Length: 140
Image (tube, rainbow, N blue to C red; front, side, top):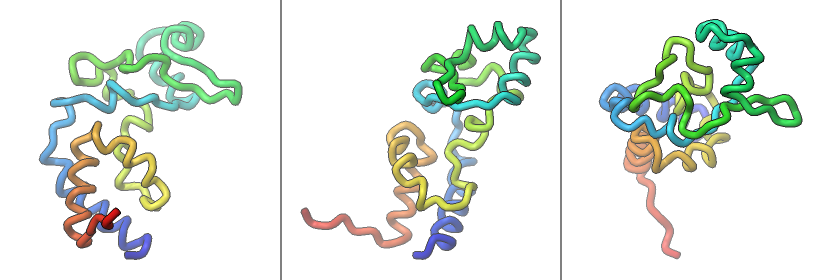
């Protein structure tokens, strides 16, 4: 299967499977992923929370030497139960996960398989993809 065909298959499986899974039943992504954020996202959420950026950064972010910012806690500070308490203002990485709608799935295989046991959507999409493509595990 070529890259475009794979993207199409993964997208279609995700569209069929995702509505059948209630993300707030597990919240595993918010419990276990480190999320990168950008300046605009930090500004947006700090304003929503009524905090200065300095307060927000001190409370919620770590900054790498390259200037990249990540949420400084796992599970995420904003996870309440299994739901996001700032859902309307959540970060792009959170909105995109598990990213089956983004082209070039074949370039994200490693990352996707890292989350295979965390996310029921990823698990079910990949297991269905194996069936649909006739995947056979090689004899080792």
